[in-house]
Image 1 (tube, helix red, strand yellow):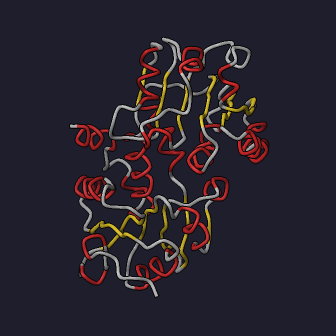
Image 2 (cartoon, rainbow, N blue to C red):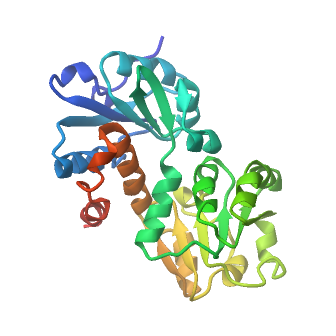
Length: 301
C-alpha cells in the first residue's frame, strides 16, 4: 500500500467544489512552476479552475492518477520521473506522444484518458519567439534520452538541413536516428548520430552549428556534456545555444557565451508547452486569450 503523500503536495479535486481541477504530477514536485503558470493562464482567459501539485510515490503513479481522475480531476501534467508511466496509463495516445514514447499531458476525451506530449511543440514555439529560424539550418542535439526523444519529431518537422544526435553512448543515439529515420526522410533532413567524444574531433565539427540543444541532465549537476575543446569548435558568433534546464546560468551556456553564441535556458519551453496543455484542456478557442510570452516575462521578473 502506498504511503500517504504530504498534504502540502496533494491535490484532491473534492476539496475544490465548483472548480475544474488540474495538477502536475512528479517526484519531487515542490519546485514546479506549473501551478503558477496555469493560474496565470486561467486569469488571462477568465477560466474557473484550480491547478495544484501531486507528489506521487515512486512505482505508484497509476494508482495515484486513477484516484485523481476518479475524484473528478480534469487533466494532469506529468514530469520526471513519470512520463513513461503516464504513457502506459493512457487509454489513447496522440501521434506525437507515440513518436516521443512519453506523455506529459493527460486529459479526458469521450470518457477515456488521452495522452499527449507538448514538449516538442513548446520548444519549437519558444525558439521561433526568440527569432530562431529552423528551416534549412544545422542542428546539434546533445543527449539521446527521453528529453531528446520528446522534441526530435517537432524539430524535424521544421525541415532543418541536417540534424546530429550526439550522446555518450552511440547505441542510444543510433537508436533515435533509426526511430526517426522515416520522419527525417519525409522532411528531407539528413539525420545522423555520433558520440560526445567525437565532437572533440575537428572532422566531426568542420563547420559551426546554427542551433545546439542541450537535452542531457548534465546542467542539473552543474556540469556540461561537452569539454572545452568541443565547445571551441561547436559554438560561433552565429550560433544559438539552448539549455533545456531553467532557473540558473549553466556551464553549457557559459561555454556558448565564450564562443560568441547567443544563449537561452528552457523556461520559455516550459511556458509554451504549458500553453499547449492548457488549450487541450480548456479549448483551442482560447488561443487568442492567453499570452505565454507575457507570462514568461512575469516569471523572469
